[in-house]
Image (cartoon, rainbow, N blue to C red; front, side):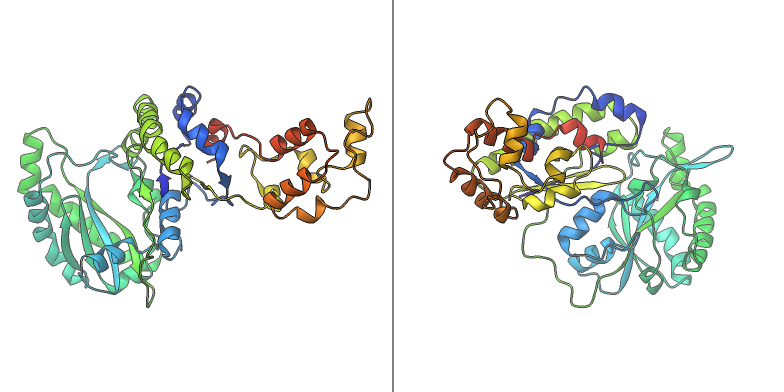
Length: 385
């Protein structure tokens, strides 16, 4: 099982304050028993969110920023066709005096019939630009056109609650679509469906957002292994910056999904856990890593001390004499002993070699192993995302 948790941390100060009081006992137990892989480091300005990159990597999809072909994958699954696709998300834009912000709230009371009514009204305008619209679900449509093959677009998870101008396409591929977006805003402004929504006190559907653009690589097939289990329960609270609700949702995830993953781990199953913030993603797995892999760890991910990383000889006689001046020969190792150095790349062999040194004090080995495989603080891991 691979558990993937988006919005495990966010860049907001309110999130940082809530993080300090979180009680995530099951996550802490998981981190203590799993090995960190190399982190996926990104930027707040990237078009594709870290959890999308992590999911795309697991599915073997292209990772180009803003061109992970999510819509093409959905079109393949629904047998809508091949080629380049995009998602079209009907949405509400909040108009301010200086900025336009995409609402972070999902459209309420937006039925399949209402969605299909708007699609029918907009379809002819899209067709004039060579774009075919296909209904998928009320909150998301599919669009097919060659123009989407090279058009990088931002994930709605990046744009929600933020100024849309910072995320609109800026290259030549996006110019016709920006014009189309302006035309649709005028069309939707006077549409009877929005008049009815306003009369009921609901926000109008006054724009759309393109995302998930791109085409699947030739010969692509989905992996035979199960896709990661995607946790979605932190998303809404994070996008709305409701940090008390986010903290409560995290504690539910810890008590349910993390408990389930821990149970599988304790049964001997191979499991993975990917925690995603707004910049980075970090994956942990149940299989042990090589000792030589520990040197790249970023701060906060439970790396060994700098003393351990910088000194290649993990247990030597000279080190023992320095650390235990009252008993200089307690370890019983020769200065030229190389049995531990020879096993640096294999933790199991290293431990076996260490056990084979009959005169090695158990307490010194335990201290060294604790230093090498130190506990990770869940808070520190989340803060680094």
